[in-house]
Length: 332
Length: 258
Ligand SMILES: Nc1ncnc2c1ncn2[C@@H]1O[C@H](COP(=O)(O)OP(=O)(O)OP(=O)(O)O)[C@@H](O)[C@H]1O
Ligand SMILES: [Mg+2]
Image 1: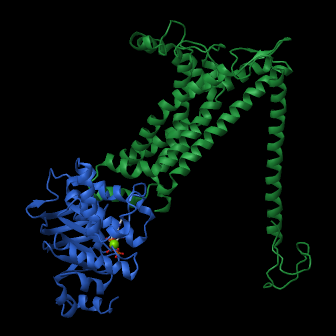
Image 2: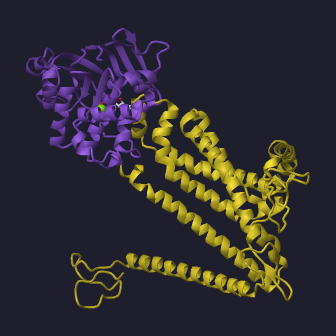
Image 3: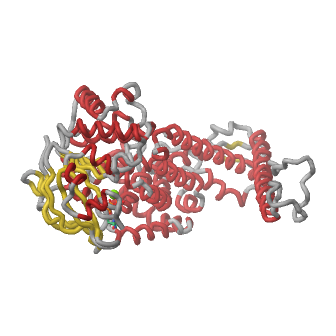
């Protein structure tokens, strides 16, 4: 950590250094300033993060210890009164379900679009298409929320009734005739929202596949699709995983769009198409302004759980990537 | 197994830039033909027109005819994918599929071509690796990634991959330029064995190598930078290196050029 000093004398203050150029212990003032600055901001960042973590943990502990019901399994959110009872089961379920639906729809579609742009579309079409997709990533989420509530919700009822007719017996796809303000709708909306970022990162990765890997497949007589299967997808695999994680991070934490579309309730619905349910972020957004101090603590505790989930998901993704490192294109 | 290549009036372009001009030559089956010439004269470009890899480059197109026995590779209705299955290629930089095991690398072309039983696949992979003089070095780690081999081993893996599909012709673009002298010798020996079964075309900057491995040698040159490359002459290797009929060839071989 300290600057190298080969002699016994203490290093002179910056600027006063009169040693010859070859003595090897001159520290230029610019280096000093930059070192001090970067070290300082690094430490400041750590301190701020530690402060946030301590604050969140402290208030969460207050909340969980004041909870008269099980914080993890209770299907209720009632932190006021003398017998506060609240739990995150509904929120965890809703967040998981809507994110899984979003990923299941968005990732394959995004990979398809990215491959189309990088390997199929003529160049004249590819760059404007890529540009439009990058633009979509910049649309604020409340806009998606409004579009979801005003367009998507009324237009999905037909599809959901069709699901109900053919798949209603599964229970998961049963549908009454309420508004389609359900977790499934949220999943679809989240899929649309994360599509641009997943597409755009995947496309970058696919464009970086070294020519020689693609030519290796071509020279064996691979068709375009076979080149993609043999060279492009394996090379892009970890990049697509990272892109998906970016998307998942956005889906897990999305607040305004979910709050605008979902009609929340503290029930775990077997049907994903019927309205109801909730997510961590949506629940915090809709309850925070009216909560008393203990109510805020309860919401903060739920936020901490979301944070931990996000960390775990990211860790898992890193593990997947690292496990296949030996086979990645990096060491070719 | 091996076929004759008959090129006539072949020019290749990158967009508007003409890289090689009006090349005609015959490559005999079961022989090694070496391409030599200064950098930028279009050896790689010409080689890549022989398995329709040239048109993979954006803007790349070709005029003229390449006959493989009696079939024009550039005839209408000829599928370039099918051409590349008959005319194999080894590149300057070893390029095994980094995500595949050694076994899967060799089997990759076979799996493209059709379905094989597991035992058949194993036999062909073993035969190809033996053909590429690599079997003894990798037989205990066939399931390890191909990218974990040394450069010379990787190049021989690429050769095994190319010969596994039993092509009619094998094109090699400076296959030894990234290798040490020992690996180079191993690959030169290998080329000597492979020519019993395949028609081989090799691009090289190494005169001794051309003299050692090839039966016939073609010399390419270009009039000036930016001009298209041309075939100056093609003849028996011995003649090219002892008594070429064109002065430019002699200058190039003896190091008097520019
Ligand atoms: N992808 C490309 N796009 C445009 N021009 C190219 C491309 N590849 C090669 N060329 C041009 O075509 C000409 C022939 O290049 P080529 O690579 O065939 O030469 P070469 O004889 O193989 O050279 P070297 O011995 O250095 O490998 C050169 O003028 C080069 O600039
Ligand atoms: Mg070349």
